[in-house]
Length: 391
Image (cartoon, rainbow, N blue to C red; front, side, top):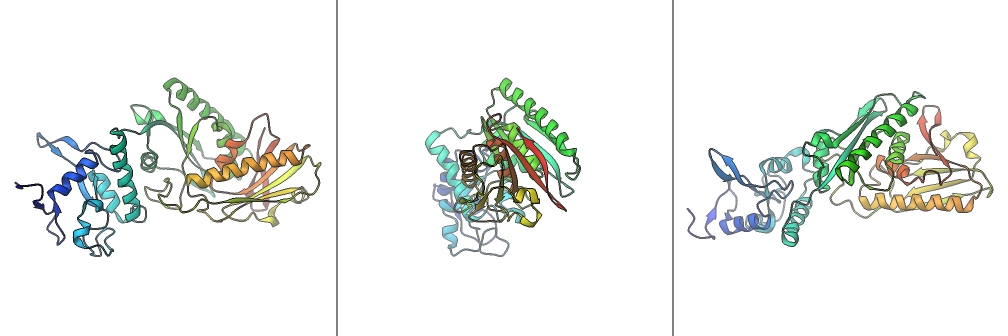
């Protein structure tokens, strides 16, 4: 048995600096005996007929600089790697996850340091780290370019924990509501069928939310842009809705906002107004890419047009909540401008190259029975065609 808090305890037989017993106690105390990622309580689990500690002290920068040491490439000395600021308390499952090759670019040194500080901050300031808020979950599965796109149960679980959310019912399956749209987007009637299924399911979610007093809805959806706009239209913006991003990756972090996304994206508008008394206006949105202007129908090209641009264009142009909020604010401002400058406008045609989160936000921003009808277009082989209309 160690004689004092400063006695040294070696983690493994691999050559590395030892972790002092006092440092171990500090890590356990600052984390309040809970996993710093999933908040699992790590004291008192039963094993071999007695209670035991099940937590594992993990290194943020790897314990050694060996090639197979997770995040091991660093100028830190072995002693610095064994210091409290480089150690984090995790459960066994989370320890395996953060050290796995597939999650290496998500659980970076910087990301783990932020997660450690976030968890320890909960302990310091609230002494109540069971802060996960209850939520219902809406998952929309659809075909995108012929292939079904969906969020897996594991991916959704990881995303909810990253958002400080938990299923709002005792049985997590009762908190999940699925919308499955198997029809190809190239079939005209698929849009009408999709709208009916979305409207019906969202109404069920509203009823369950009211009955259970659950005020948050987490949305996982990847589908053609018109379908996503419809989803946002029926979900609307009158409640706490967390729209989860679908990042271009296939691991457990696919539906998580990046921990360090950089500066928020800015959005600007360019007006090619033409006639001020027009009853129809075209809006093109260029975020993930430029709208293919050669594919715009001739009848739309003759209309007054507004173009919305992202300061940083590409698939990752909206990679933070702040960027999504900036898009929503720019879109709402543009709609107000159109109505102010075109008093007779009856129809707004929208052709958009945007990520899923922005498409849902576009639908949520539409004011039913107050704004001109909005026609959303889908890109097909022979150009853009009208898909859905919001009233």
